[in-house]
Image (cartoon, rainbow, N blue to C red; front, side):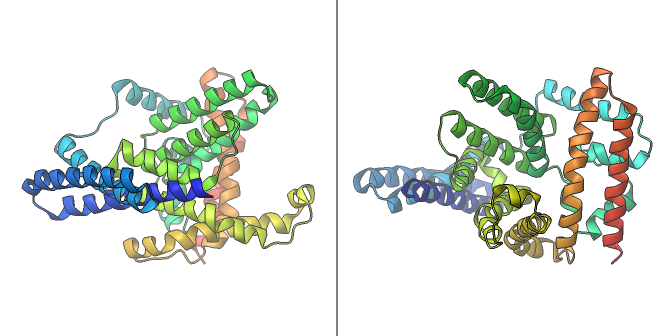
Length: 362
C-alpha cells in the first residue's frame, strides 16, 4: 500500500505540473517561456534538495510537480514550429496495412470501410450515414482507434500463445511477442495517445508478470502516466489522452466495487451465469461513463442517453468483429483466407451497423 501511495504521489503531481505548464504556454507570450523555464528549473533544483533533506511524500510531490512544469516548458521550446512525423518506414508499413484491408473482396462496401476504421484508424472511407449512426447511438468511441482496440489484440495474442506453457523460456517468448506485437501495432496505427497509453500499460503489466510480481492496476496506471508524460509532456492537452486515463481510472477504481456487488456463486459458475456477465458489462460501462462524462459534457455539451444499451450490445459484437477482422487480414496477407471467414466478418460488420442504427433511432 505504501508503494502505491508513493507512485500516486509522484504521477499525479507530475501530471498537474505538465498541465500547469500547458496552461502557461497557451496563455503567455512566447518571449516569457525562457524566463518561466528558468524559474521552473530553479524550483526543480530547490525541491530536489528539499526532498533529499526531508525525504517525505510531500517534498517528493513538490519535486515532481515542478518537474512536470519544467518538462512541459522545455518540450514547447524544443519543438516550437517543428511538426512531429513518424519515420518513413513506419508510414509505409501503415500504408501497406491499409492496402491489405482494401484488397480483401468484401461483400459489402461499408464492411471494408468499417474494418479499416476499426483496425487501422482510417475513417476516410466511411460514409456520412455510418458515422452519424455511430455518433447518435453513443458508439463514436468505437471508430476512434483507442486502447480498447489494442486490448483486443492483446487478448488475442495472449490466447494464441497460452499453449506455450509457463516455463521460463515460454514466458520470455510470450513476453517478447506480446510486447513487440502491441508496440508495432501502436506505431503502425499512428501512435495516438490512447493507443500509446494501452501499449505502455501492456508493457508494464507483462514486465511485472515476467519478473514474478503480481501486477497492480493502479501502479500500472500511474507508471504509464509517468512514462507517457516523460516521452511527450504536451500529450496532456489532448482530449484522447484525458478521456483514456479517466476511463481506465474508472475501470480500475469503480468497476471492482460494482462487479463485487453481484453475489458470487464460484468462479466456474460465474462464467456460465448470463445475468452475471450482463451485470459485469453494465458495470464496466457505468464505471467508464462515471469518470469520463463530466469531461465529455464540458467538451461536447452532450451525453449519450443510451450508453448502457449501446455498450451492452455493441461491445461484444465489436470484440468478436475485431478478432475476425484481424484473422481475415492476416490470412489474406498470407494468401490463405477462406471465403467463409470474409463473409462472417462482413455479417458482423452489418450486424453492428444495424444494431447501432436501431439504437440511434430510439
